[in-house]
Image (cartoon, rainbow, N blue to C red; front, side, top):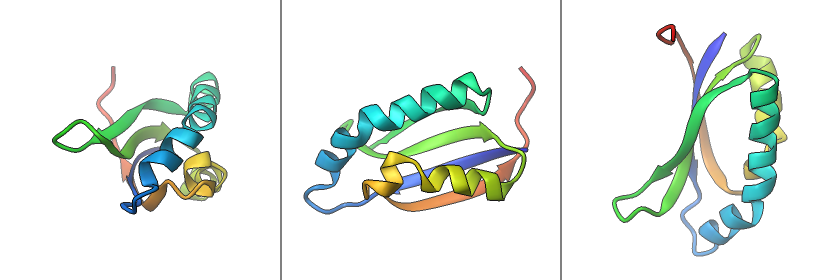
Length: 95
């Protein structure tokens, strides 16, 4: 099942520093999702000045529960980078 995940970062003074501190571990997890054919596309959400303020992911998981469990282990969740995470089921256009 396909999902769109939209995650917005905390906005406190240390938010960007936490993002950068957890970025490599987060990207390692994304590489594993790619290897598992679960990550379809995604990347950072930017503000008008180009600063990273969140993330968007297009993913393929058996169900929402499995996706939520995966997200709970993500370094951007455990490292307090993402303040809010919205998950929506989606139907993507075939490639």
